[in-house]
Image (cartoon, rainbow, N blue to C red; front, side):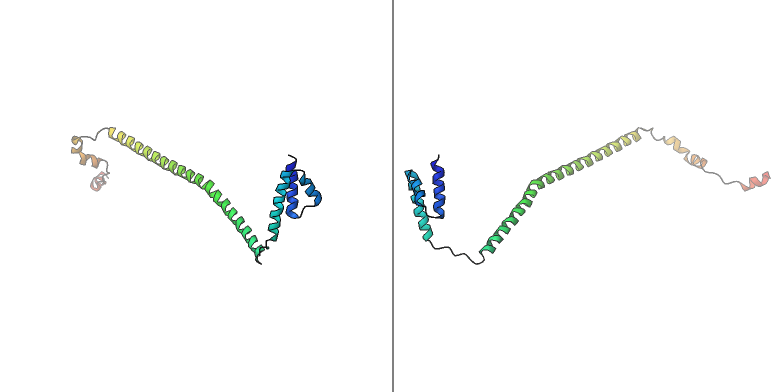
Length: 159
């Protein structure tokens, strides 16, 4: 357990610079640590001999643009997440409201038709129309409701 931090510490130092004699002496105590550090030292030496990669002159600008693009994408994903989360809920709520409205309208229509049917049933229950005998004297009955103009000759005799 104690060797692992020593090996990691020496490996990190090796990546930055060459190890001193004292540091190599600490690694020599454990043969497995020493062999791993020798392998890392060879690899580091080979990598330092590679030529430095050429970087374009607008490298910083391109990196900053990529960061801004990634931020814009994350914001767009945030809006998309909002739509994905709330759009189905709004759609279901709207569907329920439309269904409830149609059901209420149908209920009202049925209630209105039922009331009309009851009214029609009451009208048919009313006593039947008078028979043909009552219509024989229809003209006389109709004239009874109208006022007769005063008889001028009769009024003149009475005075």
